[in-house]
Image 1 (cartoon, rainbow, N blue to C red):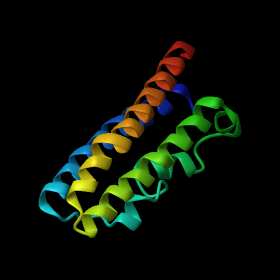
Image 2 (cartoon, rainbow, N blue to C red; image 1 turned 90 degrees about the vertical axis):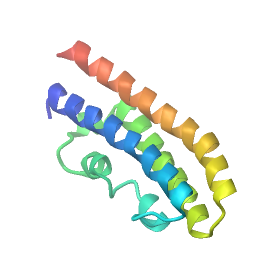
Image 3 (cartoon, helix red, strand yellow; image 1 turned 135 degrees about the vertical axis):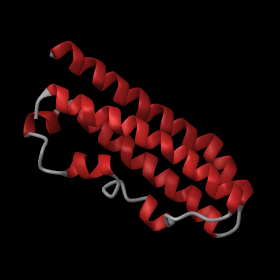
Length: 126
């Protein structure tokens, strides 16, 4: 897979994961979400996760530090999103909001920073 294709996927991921913030905030405010906690915690079910685990990336990319870091951060992001939704499902909005504003915000920021860094490295390679 060429650098531009990876950059395109990374750009899509940054936008899509930004949408998670809105989805979780809406779930906290409304007390419901179209995605279950069990589904949200799966890092291989979103478009980016399908790509990360899919066959389009070669062994060299998968062996690289950026890929390994992003794969781990992406999994942590989804685990935390699932945790927020689990709290919503239990009706515990105060804890859901606290997790959202704390742990989720931190993991989201780390993931976006890592994606942005990887994208910058790829831009320099083109």
